[in-house]
Length: 403
Image 1: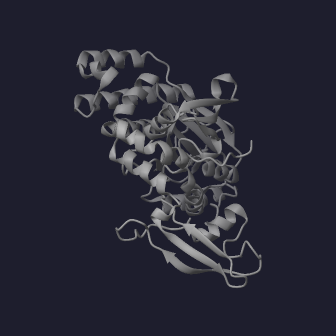
Image 2: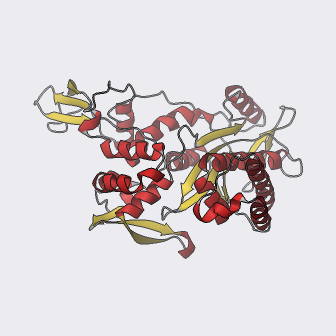
Image 3: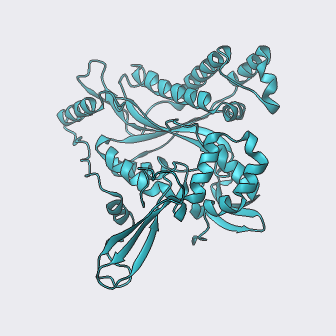
């Protein structure tokens, strides 16, 4: 489907002021900051530079990016940089994709307690994988994996879940062997689901007992301890969904997957179809209808509200590493994994890290177009001839770039 050329920024610029005036008291500082960042992204407000062709005299103005992690326009180059830096962490083994989700009642609590509940979600999912994998009845090894938080469904409703990408195997307890999982099978999702449910509810109860949860509006009754306990009992009887997708064929497929998921935002600009008469129409995939492509139309106000639901708490880390991929000791343990796999007769050398490129080189790698070659004559080189300072009176931020 051809792109409409519409952007989330178009909706924010036209309807953002009215939305802030009507809902400002209920907006977080992070939501306000994200709205403003998206509105001014790649506009004169952030400044930029003028490039000129040294052959034909063609001039081109390029404005700076906001680089907000929720901005649909700022993720492609951020994703490319991240993949460059993490390429060397992949082993030549089968990889699995495991997803942890929570029931709707828990998601509702999470909407009012994002930082607490999202932290519990990471903790419960990671501990579940590591505990079951370490059990000799299942794998009996220390695994390593990457976990990514997504908080949305295709229709922009709140749907927090964790995507985990896991190599098919791990280090033996004594660190002397690579323990491989069965081909095409990692861990029992039934076992994972039960432990995940128990851990999550236990940590959520601890948070409640410590007074770390807040309840407002329709959830106000949960402030009562007996009512909260009743909800916990109900959730323990509910089947929690943990599922494992078909395994990746190898590191190349893992990189392609990570490129799609690690820096995804609630909705990309290419899903927007129409923006007229105060409504926004976008396409979405209906998983309940066999992944059928459908369209949805929302008022601009509702579209903005749903988008802002997915703005994460300031400083919250949404991509995390665990086990032998944890930040501490990662290089040494990856080297050990490679050595053990090679000793077992497998080509297990981690993929070589690509040199870290500047944003212009990444742009060329992503699009096939060089920003240094004049788009007008195709022969001259574009040279920076003027800096455009940001419209604000504040000093030019050091993180601004024209990516």
